[in-house]
Length: 216
Image (cartoon, rainbow, N blue to C red; front, side, top):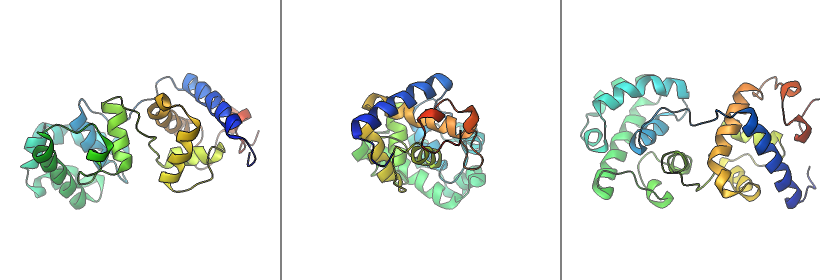
């Protein structure tokens, strides 16, 4: 695959997407949320933490702080108590309160809809911004690259890069913009169900014939 042309890689990427989409029609954002504020909070909490754990703590957090205004006025120790089990709780609590305060001060309490504005919020990097834009606003600004997306992108020969920023750069070259958000969900679902880090189930994989790493 090292000498694969960009045109051929795009054709293969399209086939991979279509097959995986049919295989995982339920692929979606795994963080429970009902509005952009909740998704922003949940995504900040998800750093080095499972989505399942985040979903366990956010119901209480959202009951106590249902919007940016209420979270901006929260005491850090109170937020820390609720989110303690997500890990790095002191820094996350500081970022959550800082994010909420910035949203109130700069954006009238509403989560902004641009990458430039989002990444200026405490605790919000490019990955979090892409999650919020794609899933809360339907804006395909980039591809969210987590460990699953990076692993599968490498195994599928869609990139040889390791850093999330460079992996994303390669993926946006071969997938149409309107697929960027769903692409992440599809790769994550496939990574969890069929292509884990250890012992990938190549014999069960619908894209094995398109994967240079396949063992079948």
